[in-house]
Amino acid sequence: MSERQDWIVRPERPADREAVHALNAAAFETPMEADLVDALRADTDAWIEGLSYVAEAPDGELAAFALITRCRVDEAPALALAPVATLPKYQRQGAGQAVIEAVVDAARARGQERLLTVLGHPEYYPRFGFTRASGFGVRPGFEVPDEAMMAMVFEGEGPVPSGTIRYPAAFGV
Image (cartoon, rainbow, N blue to C red; front, side, top):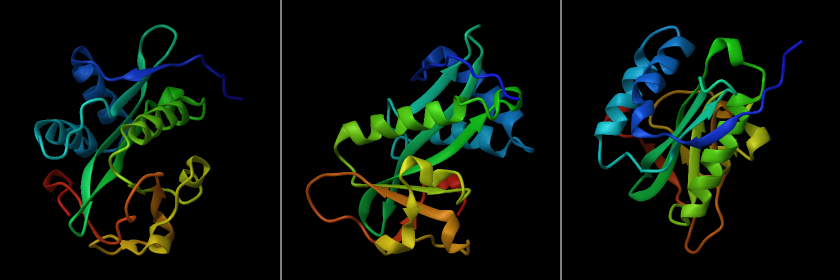
């Protein structure tokens, strides 16, 4: 049985950088995601201040992290949710969900981009409002199962982008 926590969810602060790196390194089998976050932070075209969120446990330890960066769908601006990480000891306790909800709300509130994409578990991300990206005419530029490439549309003016997703160079795809 998982113990539920009261998470403090907030934008990442400069003082969190080392802890965010360590959290991502601990949450994944390799340091690739931790290094990806560092590379995205250095990419001024990709990084959007205020769209990097953490969830703190009651004792102040960072429990979860979610990042949204700028990408493109063909030539149109769009957003990408990646990575999302939760320390193993806090998984299945709501930290990941809390941080995803907060960063998605922050991206929506910007009112700039209309499309948010995520490549992830098709059983998990629909609870946040993601559906198959192919339904919007959006596809990755590499081979992935259709159900794993998802997107969410934000309300706003203008058309929803469609075409091929172009991720920042740090993603290596």
